[in-house]
Amino acid sequence: MYIDTHAHIQDDMLKDRIDKVLFDAKTNNVKKIVCASYDIKSSCDAVNISQKYENVYAIVGVHPENCEEYNENLEKELANLCKDKKVVAIGEIGLDYHYTKENKVIQKEVFISQILLANKLKLPIVIHTRDAIGDTMEIVRKYANCLKNGVVFHCFNASEEILNEIINMGFYVSYGGVITFNNAKNLINIVEKTPLDKILTETDCPYLSPVPFRGQINEPKNINLIIKKISEIKNIDLNELEKIIENNTKKIFKI
Ligand SMILES: [Zn+2]
Image (cartoon, rainbow, N blue to C red; front, side, top):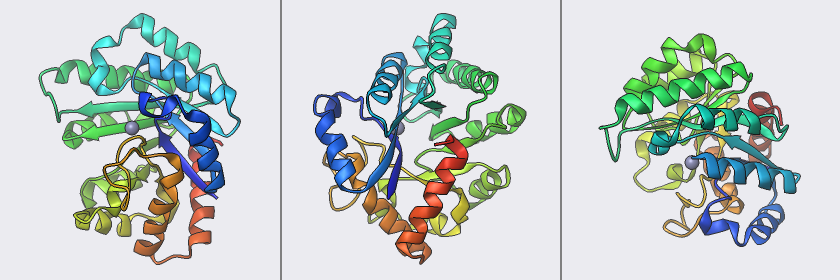
């Protein structure tokens, strides 16, 4: 059985045919799907979907690209959503300097606010970081005391040094379709170095379809290709790896 710990099934590309998406996931042995959010609307949608489907859970939060919408009222709404038992984490939150660095200050403020919120609500966080690993780690180090409920670095792709630091802090890293890409040589080396008990798996659908579906709309049913790739890199039996990943997911998200 597979677990997709980071899927945007509330996205416009998937939500209109969500029954079919979830049916196909089920028939492809996907046991649990965690629906990750990026703004307040997607957070509400994720919770609604998780209420409707037993095997779907929700992560709520504001992505750095949407940091400008964050305010006190929105934070209250997020806290309210977290009262639902199907909400398992705050995310995806973090820093993204890929498209703009101009709002760095706001991005950091919103990231920190959501770290503090997660700590107050005793929830783990799911971090998105792109072209911003230095500043991200600075905040993670500074607020380590507020991260005792756990951290997942989603779609992880950084140096071995950063990997080691994250692992030493007791945090998890999640791998997706990128590890199947032809140019993923460095990343494959990082997967190889990652302890098995710190690995999670995700599709990040509808984005980042694994090979051979690269460029197409991604779905949770494709998670098997990612787990298979990890089993090859780590040279471990697929069934054994599935159980380890189920166990890791249980530890961090309590599901
Ligand atoms: Zn995502």
